[in-house]
Amino acid sequence: MVHDHAEIGRFLKAHRSALSPDRVGLPEGHNRRRVRGLRREEVAQLAGVSVDYYTRIEQGRSGTVSHEVLDALSDALHLTRVERDYLQNLARRFARRSGGAGRAAGPANGPCAPPDLPPERVRGPVRALIDAMDDVPALVLGGGLNLLAWNRMAGRLMPILDEIAEPHPNMARLLFLHPDVAALHLDLDEMRREVAAKLRADTGRRPDDQRLCRVVTGLKAESPLFRDMWEAQEVRERMNGECRLRHPVVGDLSLHFEKMLMPADPGQMLVTYVAEPGSPAESALRLLAGAEETV
Image (tube, rainbow, N blue to C red; front, top):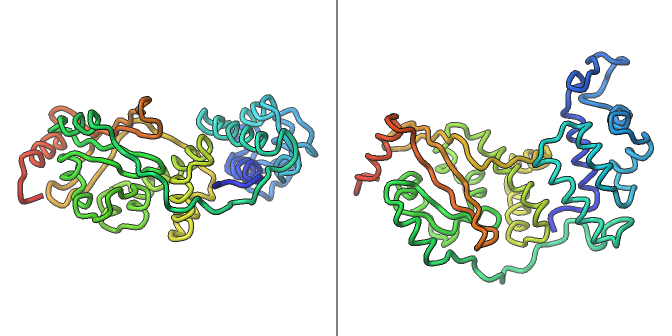
């Protein structure tokens, strides 16, 4: 399990500290402000709860917190839909584990399961689908952002994939720990933040996912940068957007990515990359598609 019973309080504290007073109508110098972000009493007032109750929530002493109170706190802290869902998921999880009151049972941040989980597999038709996308880089991600499969064009777009010996490399670990993968990304810091925020969102939905647990706990131990980004309590998930890469052969290119969940294969996601028609990136992809021994 990745989270302990104090996670709700850490999440709330991080987000009230990050919220500027002017966003909620308070001047920066309100009452000789000495702390960054909002004070506990300000969040409590905005949410319509007592300061004592909010303090107990943030300190992990409140027991079960109702959906309505969490909604009010989400409004007060201007949380996004993904952040709201994460907060509600945490609350439901600990309510179930505690039997509806008090602290969650079991050890905090307990160890992940032993490494004997069955391997994740990509169905034959899905494998055939990405292979048929001959001019489109496509890959399949599994639990904890494990890279389960990729087609010829994805291997040419990210050459390091075909050089990695392990059967299912992990995209998050590659991004934080592999210099060659990091060097591909022109927006490296933002990409890393997004990955950390995506993993945190996933832990809210699947707190007992052992593959996810191993990735998060491993990265926290091996990457101080990941640990800092994880502790920032950011929760985000982009299903589409722009990806800027610096390819060793074709140079800089800007691609549009789409992530598609696969309902028939829970926990798996198809990711594709396409270029704007007529753009330099489209020409670069064509070059990669026709390249043989140069890429």
